[in-house]
Length: 633
Image (cartoon, rainbow, N blue to C red):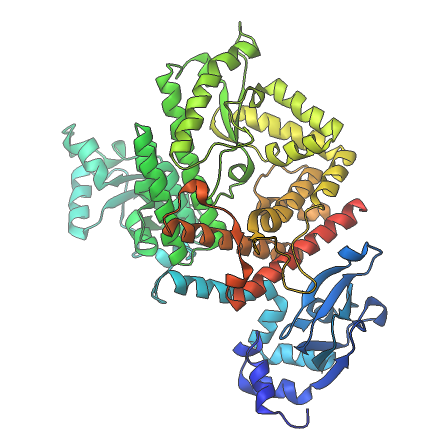
């Protein structure tokens, strides 16, 4: 441009990434840009033009991206770019032709920068380079800051659950030798004002730990000899993590097992100690207390209180900006504890605990719970797998288990997990089966491939053991991984079925909405990622159930590029956090668990979130395009 008009500069700096770039770099870019005009329907960039030769920013109008394959007219447009958006980043970065045809959806004007100047700008401007190479991750970081501001004014200096363990250690660990007397250890703990002591060997390897809690149970009440070696009364059940592990890993360990301390160990040597108090300073919620209260609950009423605590915990963590992947892990972990305690209580009430029947039962989580992807709005999807004790038939076992399963389902409903309307629950005789019966059922679904069997596969294939004889579920998982990966016809049918659910991107408007002018974030947003990841995982013979783990672990065998995987995961996590925000806001309005839904009006989102949601849906389209390519659909 010969001269930069203030209005042009104002326009550019309203949009990412230019709003974060140094003004001098923005001016340098604009001085080298020129205007381009394209009439409606005109091709702007296409694969046939060779390596991408210019970077474009839309000044006015819309650009449609079309897959370069013969498709039905209504499926041609797979993305729509609007004012302020730029393209084609991937092709420019890789110095290759674009993969899609970019066509003017209306008369448009663009700012255009040569490929050579684009690459110079990448070196000059870190914010520009970060945006271009990590586009959706960069946008997500913007959104995360907005979300935190909406929930609380958390100090920018406060560490978070994403901090490494090495950053949380408050002091060098105070240790003793295993031969040190109990009296000496107590004196040191009092003098140093510390709540624990770790015994280490000559090489610094931890051998045992004693805490203030142990003083009462192991010293004061038994009135032991204080001059005996401390190692004799120490706990040798040590939980350790490396310095690079995150605080949220320590919090999960404490919550799951009831520990109050986690050792930080590097090359087998103790380098630090992190206590629950250290983590409370980060999270402002008592994770261990919640877990402990659930594990020790003796009634449905106590479990209901635990469920309420889980919801408050989720709200607090969102206020701190805890990453969505970690937050869903926390929610799922606590829901697991609550469900397991419900199962345990009902088996005790039925007088079955410790019997051969009880020892051969496994309660399985299905659906989102089976994938560790629960939010605050989730109904029950569960099943039972059992071994048949000698002298009994499968039908006799089922007859004894179903009444117990029914009471468990009812207890969970009281805790805020609604009964499944489709009756996909352990109390349904169809889903309370022996290992052999489950294999026959899965085998029938794989062999037949009817719409009903494909639907069942999408729910039941995400099973995992939650309580009891985990070996049964592991056996079934290994068997399924072998059988499904060998059945290309079934995987082809699953892929075909998954592609019926297209992300609701519009051609005229940003999104396609229903009569209520709302989008279903679960059906239209989350499900395309979940379905594709399941298919890739089954094809790769992988045994994971979590969607993100499935994408990562099947990448090599399916020849999926790391950058593609990262973008899909970021997109999935953004939609997930939108769901959790929506559920939290509905709960704050006093709506009950059954009233929570996944439907949002995109017009009610701020501009940044609308943009990221649109990008997330594009990533879902790209994932589906990869599925189409893999199965020639």
